[in-house]
Image 1 (tube, rainbow, N blue to C red):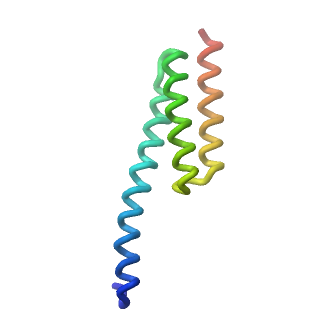
Image 2: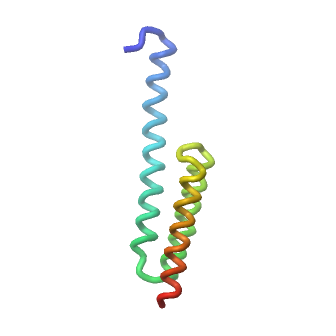
Image 3: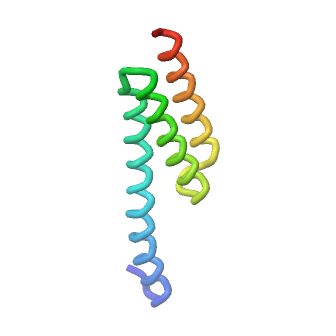
Length: 87
């Protein structure tokens, strides 16, 4: 346990931030899964836009690294393009 008041406050803040970060990471993972589970190219394209927005937002806020967001957006875009050409 922390011995200083400031350390106790830091523990409280860390718990809040951890919950906040976890919420947004789960939201991003769900958005990625939604894109991959899309059956049509149009549906996948709409979900890709939403997933890209979420990934950009959490990368800007420092919840995930910007390269993590960029890599996932790139992979999802390739997946959607593959869906388009398959039809």
